[in-house]
Image 1 (cartoon, rainbow, N blue to C red):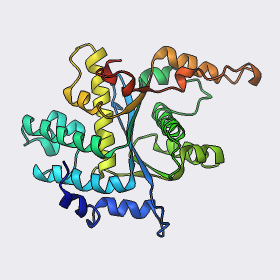
Image 2 (image 1 turned 180 degrees about the vertical axis):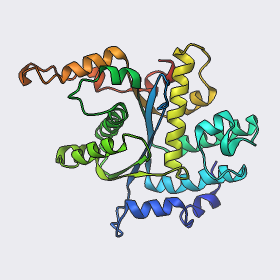
Image 3 (image 1 turned 90 degrees about the vertical axis):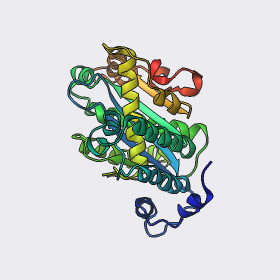
Length: 301
């Protein structure tokens, strides 16, 4: 149960979240309710079997509370920010923290995510397979492709639940192909139907180690890659309990295998007359939901 005093402080705290809301609501534009979408990536290092872009949708008032509760967990252990790979491996700012305490930090943060987030979204692909199979005319790299599908997940959710509130999008900055992804989103802004479908209000690439939304997205992306490696990698292990706990919150996911990529790229073969191009199959439009498989984590599918 959330301490009501902490809950009230969320609206008085001059935290990073307050600064972020000034960006989301420039000039006091005064939306009664907004939604914030945060995304980060994991598995982009050389040799990784999977790259994942993942994140959360959070109502703005819930995000204020989320920031305060997130910071309260970290302050108990004397860490200034959360980075999942450092926490999991006990390195960097988590080097002096015991494995037991690191597990407790993750558990507490996951409980906060489950309480405050509206929906989790994860899209994954083998970056090596993507690079080897993407045709020359296909301008999106693997990162931008996954980010594009995360946006499709947002649009599908907004349509299904008839969400009308504007959405501001935030992406962790620093990826080598950030400019490609940013260019793609700017292209989207020229289409009224796409803007309406995404409920687009604004987007930013931010350095967000201390922002709860970005840190939560980092946690999800890392856990998703770990679940994939534990399930399908050369050293098979049980899916982490932390990931299973996280999946008790509704998450949707889409993973592109090599055969999926081949089929997908063939759909957009420019040599085909437009009338002969295939309709996008259902499997490229329907996300897998944790609600579809109760008791079985997405990483095991």
